[in-house]
Length: 428
Figure (cartoon, rainbow, N blue to C red):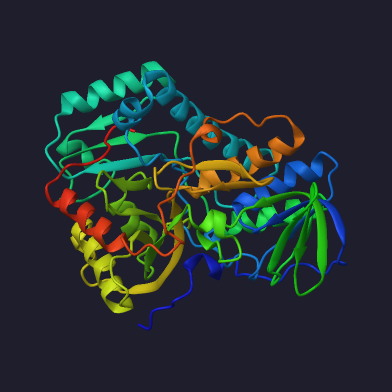
C-alpha cells in the first residue's frame, strides 16, 4: 500500500482558498495566521463590531490546526508538582483552573454554534508503563477531585483492559472531561462562522513587511498594504523570519502522525472498548485514538529522525508496542506538522511594541490556541482578557534566532528519562 503523505483529516476537509472578497486598505484589527488562534481572536472582535482582516500565507487549513491529533487535552507540559515547585500552590491551581475553563469553553462554542466537527466527549486514558504506586495515583486523583471537582479514575493492570487491549501498561488513569474532534472539520467550521460574522480572510497572503507607524501598524502584502489600529500575530510554530521577536522565543518541534488502513469498527472496538482518546505518561510518549468513524487507529509522537522512512517505522513500532495485534496492519497515511514550545514550556500571551502574541501551546493547541486567541481579542476589547498566562516572562536565549540546534540533545535526554522510567505526569 502506498502511504499518503497528506493528513488523513484532509480526506473529509481539504485545504481551500479563501472566499472572494475585496481588499481593504484600513481595518481596526489585522490578524496574521488563520488557524485556531487567529480565528479564535477574529470571531469575538468581529462580533463586537470591529473590522477584522486575517492574513494567511498558505491555503486555509494547511497549518497545524488541521494536522493535529484532535484530542482536547488542554495539557500543561509541567506536572502539577513542577508547577507547585515553580509558582507555589495557589498559582499552580490557577493554571489548572484555566485549563479546565478553556476546555469547557471549546465544548460550549461547538455546541452553541452547532459546529459539525465530530466532537465526542469520550474521555482520555493515560497509560502508565512503569510500576507506579496505585496508592500514589489514587491520592493524586483524590486531591485533583478536591481541588477541581473532576473525578480521575485509576486502573490497575487488570483494569487497563477496560480501555485498551494492550500488554504495555501496568496501570493508568482516566479523565472523563477530555474528548476528541475532527480538527480539519473544526477549522473549516470556524472559518464559516468567521466569514458569516464579516471577517475578511485572505489566503496565500503573507505579511511581508510589518511597520509600526505611530499608534497604527502597516502590513505590506503582495495584494497591497493594509493599515490597522491593532495587530495580533497568531503564527505560533509557523512563525517566519519576518517576525523575529516571536521566532526567537519559540522552539519549533515536528510532531507526526500515522493512520492505519481501515480495520473495521468491530476490531477497533475490541482493541479500544470505550473508544476513548489515549496518551502515555512518558516524556516522548505517544498520543493515539480511534478515527471519528471508528474504523482506523491514529497514533502520533515527536519526530526524532529527519529520515521519513525511519520516522514512519518508529511510529509503527510505537503502535505495535501498544497493540501487537496490528503487526500485519498497513499504514495508510503519514504526515507531520510543527508545534511550538516556549523555553519554560508554558503557553504565552504577550504584548511587545504594541503587537499581541498568543503562542507556545506545547502540542496542546486544540484547546489552548483558540482560548488564547480569545484572550488576545479581550485585550483589545478590554474585557474577558484575564489569563494566568499573560504574566509569564516570554524569554529567549542569547543568539537564538529560531533554529533549535539543541533539540537533538533535548530529545536524547528525554529518551534517557523514558528508558529510566521517570514519567513526568500521571494523574492529570
